[in-house]
Structures are given as C-alpha cells and as structure tokens.
Length: 177
Image 1 (cartoon, rainbow, N blue to C red):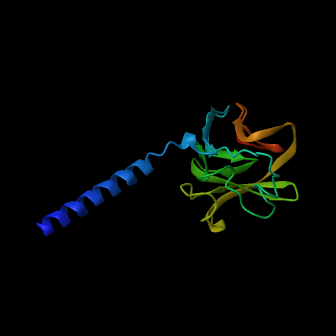
Image 2 (cartoon, one colour):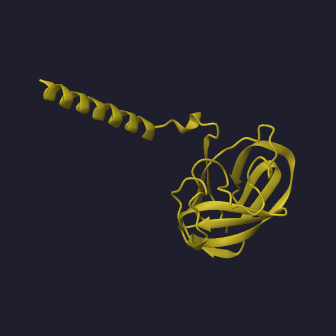
Image 3 (tube, rainbow, N blue to C red):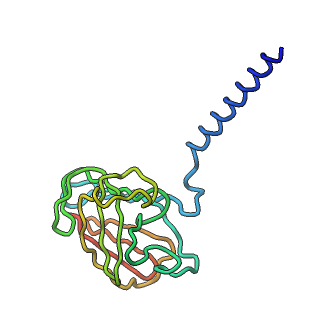
C-alpha cells in the first residue's frame, strides 16, 4: 500500500510540474512591463520586412545611464527576447547587401553614433549570448534629435524602406532598399 501511495504521489507531482511548465510556455507576453510589438511593411522594392520587438518605457530614467543603450555596450534594441528583423528578399541596408532571412537586430552606441547590427542568431534572449562572430552586417545609422520625446521605444518602417527607431529624445534611421 505504501508503494502504491508513493507511486501515486510521484505521478501527481510529475503531472503538476508538467502542467505548470506548459502554462509558462503559454505566457501572455502582452502583460509584460515591456510588451511585444510587431511592425510590417512591404517596401517599394517588393521586399516584405517585419521587425518583432518588445517596447521598454523610459519611466523617468535616463537613457545611456539608467537605461540602454549605453555607450560601448551591445543592446538588443528593445527588451526581453532579441529584436528580430526579417526580410522576404535580398535587400541593401544603407547600401550594403543583406540576404533574405531572419536576423537578430542589435545596436551599439558610441558618443551619439549608432551602429545597427544584423546577427544570424535570431532566436535568443536579449544580448546575453550575443557573439560578434555571428554578425552578418553592421551599418552606421543616422541619429537625430526627435521632435518630441518618445516614452515607449517604437520602431516604424516607411513604404520607401526607411526604418526609424524612436527612443527618448533620439530618432535613429537606416534605409532598406
């Protein structure tokens, strides 16, 4: 009887653990402090572009000091999982070739200059496992003062292929053709 009770207890514990694990996998990401966002556009060249990212908020913090991006450190260009840039066709980014595919999108700042990084390891959490050796492309982006501050990190894609990242008082752009 003790053996039967022990077996049933262990079985019940395993079932409960499996159920909790399945629930974790079905997490409602919209309830995160930095919710997910997806922007899509078929640009004038015919390439379908999508950027899947999470939107951190400034919440009174100082970007570059209390909040990423910080000079010299690779940023996941959003929050949570690494931002994913996907293109249906070969494109050029600021004139440099990028093959069709799915990439993680990172950025690096240095004294106000932004570098946009396309990395072949797209399915990763943040920039913790980022490896420069996996970079496919790095391009300089144009950084300007935003007309109005943006509380929640936002990415847009214009029909002409201009990608704009708005964050705090920065408006950072690069061209996809």
